[in-house]
Image (cartoon, rainbow, N blue to C red; front, side, top):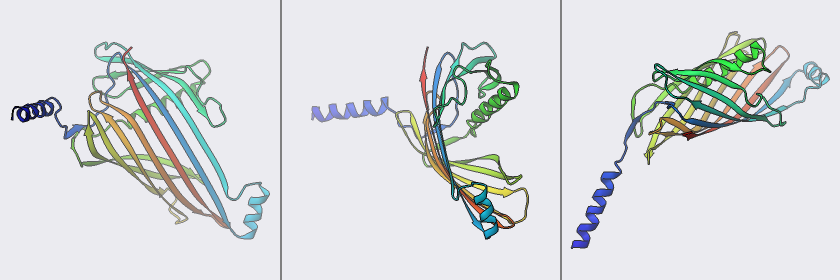
Length: 275
């Protein structure tokens, strides 16, 4: 009997010291005096297939365009985001590119390129300058815009989520095509699956809504994606993110048409260190 009581007391103590989490507020926060090592892998395979009248197909062949045309791109980027001591009301930070490699082994962004910024209050990082002697002003502005766009995607609705809850986030993008653009809205659904040992697991799904700027019924397109995400509740940080997407498009021209199929993979991991 004493053994049974002892076991019950141990179980009660264990359950009290390890409270079960059944909800959270998904909010990304970078904390002072920490280093965030972010590793990103992107891969894309695009297949374009042409079909149509003989005169058009001969013209395509004479231009040495392969049918189908297959292209592959893969990059790996390692960056380090370092936050300093908080100087009221802002938190200075730097984003350093350690390595950015393509399939051909070339660096997309020179190693050591630094983007400087700050965090005000509980906002996400704001980037305002690039330290690189090898970049032109236009290249620096493009890199700044790329960093801003990337971190803006970490802005989520501040609502409490319980296990099984789902919310959606829209992101508008434009896809250039045939002298015009395809206005696209990417809708990402986030579903909270579980919270174990302070780590929240999300199931992700995506849908692409494509609207051509030139409404002539010559374009059709659709896209979808599936992925997973891990969120560190205590540190307020997404530590793992992966997404596989597929886009299918068709464009009809006067004498021929082409089908475009793109398969993409994106994965990112974040490790947190205290200097």
